[in-house]
Structures are given as C-alpha cells and as structure tokens.
Length: 129
Image (cartoon, rainbow, N blue to C red; front, side, top):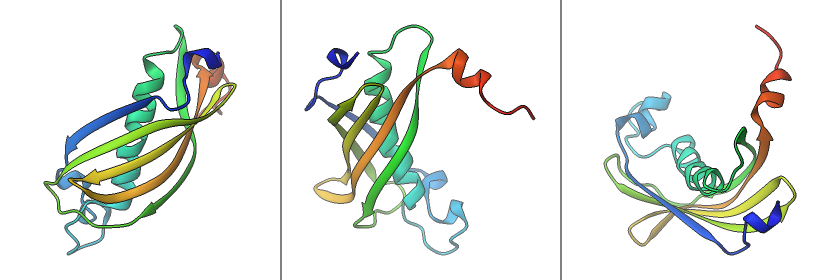
C-alpha cells in the first residue's frame, strides 16, 4: 500500500472563505474572522483529496489526529490556500504536514493524520442509533 503514497508529494486546495467559516458562525459574536475549526477543516480537505485519488474501490479515509497552531487571523472573504505534504506513511496511516495561507501570511501550520478504512467494515463497526 505505501507505494501509492510518496513522502514529499503535495496537494493544494483553494477557497474563498464565507460567513459560514467565520468565528461568528461558531458562536463567537463580533469576531468576524476565519474560525479555528474552519481552518482545521480546510486543512483536512487537501489531505483527504490526495488520498481519494489513490484509494481502491470500497475504501475511504477518516481523520485520526490534528496537531496545529493557529498563527494569524484572516477576515471572512479571504482567499485561503491549504497545502498538504505527505510526511509519514505507516501502513494505512498517512501523516501530512499542513499549512493554511492567506497570500504570504501563514494562518495555521502543523500536522494531520488520516487512516484508510474499508468502508463496509468501518460502518458495520459503528454503534446503532
């Protein structure tokens, strides 16, 4: 499996932040900047997209670890670039170095790990509602 994922390979995701990404949308009234949880979500996307291009039928990915620092603020409406670089491949676990940028400003930086799962088995193991 590890031959599908090359250490050093990268993936970039771009988006213009919206009101739904703001700290206000997360309940922090009066703080109209891109929220920490929204940035974390933006960093997950390029990791997931990189993996999805390399999975077998019936496989998916789930996040297992996030270790990031929120370094700077960006206003709602900012164009954000989220970068992921494969750092470690350990069987079905892939760790990425991640970074979110607004222009040249680093907004968030750290690592995100995802695991590759067999979807049928994964969903069969979930508790029933």
